[in-house]
Amino acid sequence: MIEVRNNVEKSRYEVLVDSGVVGYADYKVEGDVLTAPHTVVDKDQGGKGLAGKMVTQLLDDARDAGQSVIPECPYVAGFIGKNPEYLELVPEDRRADFGLDK
Figure 1 (cartoon, rainbow, N blue to C red):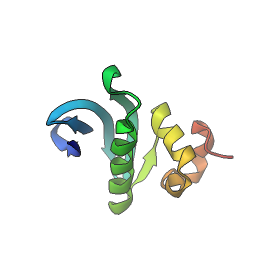
Figure 2: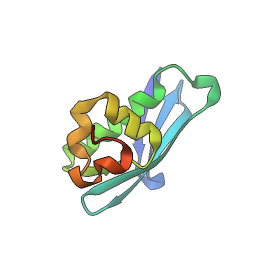
Figure 3: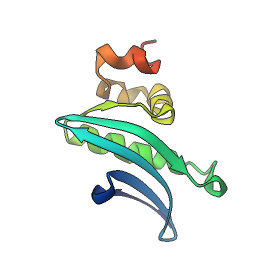
Figure 4: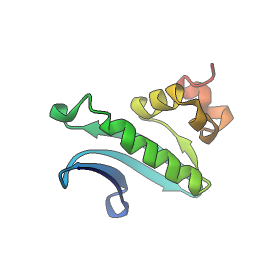
């Protein structure tokens, strides 16, 4: 079973497989801005779409909270680039910083 949860105490989203944490996406919130600096998934769990599930939840939650997103993590920036429905979360004047100005 795959589960994604927001571990507020650790400021990270976690993806669990059979109740064990196999990846996480760190975040920092300042006011109405969520910065996503780092995403990790265990190597033996790679290629299963787990990072995408985690980042989708992070971005959906940020949208629901009215937050903008600064995707410092290359994976998060790339995910937004491939899923333009999330582009609106990145401030327009910062998109070029992450290769999202195309």
